Amino acid sequence: KDIQYVDSYCYNKLELIRFDSNVGKYVGYTELGVKNAEIWNKDPSQIASERAQRETYCLHNVGNWYPNM
Image (tube, rainbow, N blue to C red; front, side, top):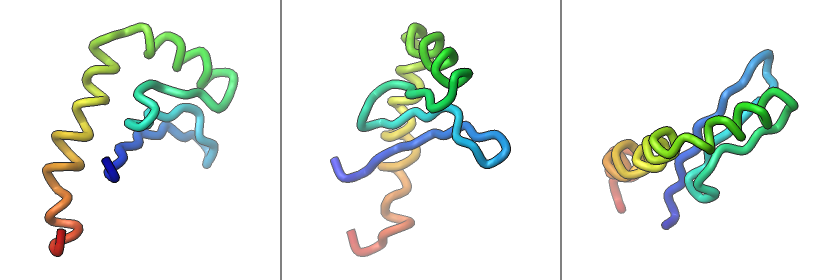
């Protein structure tokens, strides 16, 4: 539960949109980001793919980053 997967999309050092595994959906931080978040959140396969990244990427590699765990 302590492991969090975050996928951020930035342009010119400005974060437009982010997927956070704790929230479970995309959140937009700009006008364009909000519009894209609404579209991406309506696609169940996109959300399922992002949610699966926590298990396939983060949990799989946690032993490499924190060998004492």
